[in-house]
Image: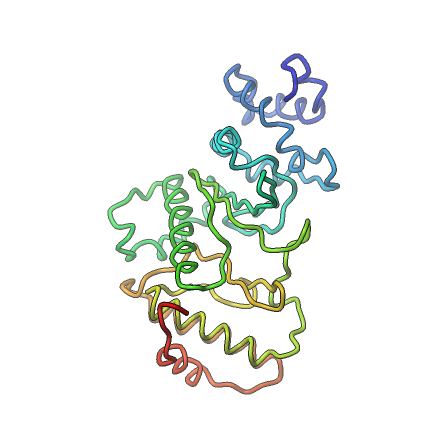
Amino acid sequence: MPNENNWDSDYPDLDKILKSEKKYEWISEPKYKKIFQEIEHSIQGVLGKGQFDWVDRRVFDQVFDRSTLLSLHKLMQQGNIETIDYPLARGKEAHVFKASSKEGPLAIKIFHTTNAVFKGLTKYIDGDPRFSGLSRRHRELVNIWVRKEFRNLKRMRKYGIRVPEPISSLKNVLIMEFIGSNETASPRLKDVNIEDPISIFEEILKMTAVNWQICDLVHADLSEYNILWKDNTPWIIDVGQGVTSRHPSANEFLVRDVTRITNWINKQGFDYSVADSMVKVLDIPVKKSD
């Protein structure tokens, strides 16, 4: 860890920028300065330093506010994370970073705590009995969303659906299994050419059936953008918006998921109907051991 006297020399450019911007004044307060010093080398990748050759100050601005840095500090102190290296993906609600731990590579999903887009996501929480009666303040909504994704991942993995293993979460930070090899993340389904797309289509429909019939969940945003391709098999990601069948829009979300996956296979030169795909999802025999 860097010595306190080396604060100005470790990252002089960043330190100068932070001190000159009002929203980062808090980082110079003794308590937060000490915390930041304890983790600055562990987040050197996202600061544009170290072995990873990328830098974008906008990422730091969007993601690493005081609450997030405090959460990361706690997770690092607990030994859950060693370093945060570089971004894997970014969306309106969250950034996903490749990270490292003593056990190997990780994926860390950090949700934006000041992004107004989250107001549009209440439709995936309102009506879900697992989260009824909870606060709707923006920061609390983000924390609810993280817990929701963690629980959905655990439930889906329990019944054999290939999703990243959830490892830990704290406030707006979700730690998951890294889907990829070495330093390279697996590509999205939309970005690869599949030799046997029909079998993959059938496999995705079966996972959707297990999710609906056994897990009592619907993904609610399933498409080739939210499926990774690793070792010639599909892995489903981004399950935070998933709802139970008791949600008032569950059937609508299921039809939308099946429609998108059917559209994907038809882009490969086939002609499947959404109705036939829905029949498979609703009627295909699945067991809890699947």
